[in-house]
Length: 436
Image (cartoon, rainbow, N blue to C red; front, side):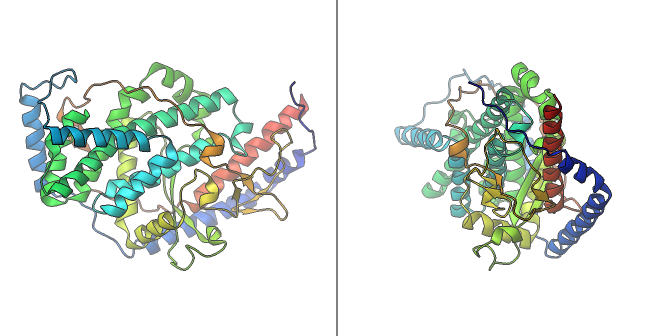
């Protein structure tokens, strides 16, 4: 039996928001100015994030030799047999990767554990923070606002897209990190085993160069390029993904679903990271990804996020402080418990009433429901990805340009503005529903 929605007059809420639009524009512009001030303040303590041109040139030569060699990149091509010790190690790597690839929470935690043990692997911390955002986007689909704008079928399609993308990246990247860790244990590089793990031929020269130089910037950009190419044909270009997700009206309206915002919660005050109510003092740094379908944009945004995260001492310390203090659950209450709650306060069949006043709740308003991942989605069985090597030319090297951070990267104001837009869309949509 279909439950009847509980009606309540609420048009005045949306109307009030519209009437106060000039005031809201003022607050938005003021907030944007504050965000620029925070960006400028963080930029006062820059860190060096650069790529050594000489090392890049040596890798370019190695990649060119690979392309000119007679060795095919066909995954069915037989590989040299590993030794018994190598085979046992490869089996452990595969098993550990499969175990930790169960869901977004396990993946996210695995990235952070790797970075804690091997902080030269910058990509691991970047992946941890981006993976947190993936989890927040997944639970948004079962949270307070987004389910009122999309159907359950649409939510399921978007979740599966996010889960597949995150799963595939992990199953390709994490074995590489584990192989590096094993190399350190033995005191010698083991990157000749990367083909055994079906890793693109693109990556081996970068790992070999990293072993010699510890050029974290070069390796991080290479991993960003590799992982985005890895999911391009396997996921992004798949016809069902294009039609059911990327070309859908709901996904194209990404600004409303906030699937295009990647944020890093941070605090510059070490005392606030564990204090009661600390979430209200956490700010958000990051960027907006305008078009997920565009491979070049995904790579360039990934590079920019890396430069933001590792380019400024205070932001890096503030983000690491947050990541260490707050275990990832998938709920946005992980960083802003003053706005979000993991426990649902209202029935989804009740009419939504206005709760937000900028970045705060209105007096007496209940926090927005943002469930933990375990309460939103069950673990999902993922089909193995298609086996092929994307690397067939040196075109990918065009992305190795100097790393530069954007002028403004504090996203606190943009995030709050987007959240208020979602609420306005919900209010307007439910008004139209009441009119029927």
